[in-house]
Image (tube, rainbow, N blue to C red; front, side, top):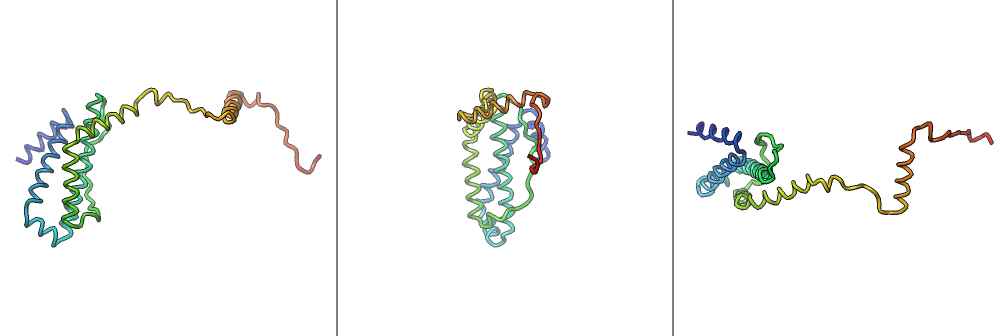
Length: 177
């Protein structure tokens, strides 16, 4: 059954990556609810901090996957091609989240963000749209100060001349006069 699910996710990733990542996150959240609903698992996490580290590393990956989902959905909204590469999990456990309460807080934050990922994707799409705006790229970089404008004009004038047109600079030794 797991292999069939992986094949389906691979096909979805090629056709519509947003749907593949969303389906994967739904599975992760369901597994998280099962984990935090199990009293024995919570007792194991309290007794063994390495269990909490494993869970917190998985939650960090889930947050990164949610960020990827938001970015992919924003690209889909704008109709642009995403520059995201395939998701690679981070297998290093962080030092934070050594208690079941910290893991639960992180999991609740993940669920809350997942519930409003469409709104977050809309905000990200607006940011991406403003980054691609031709008006922003065409903005001039000229100064507003009159003195700096004169310096810039002088620099542009000198930059347009060749070294032969600059004139001859005569350097005299300090001792000769």
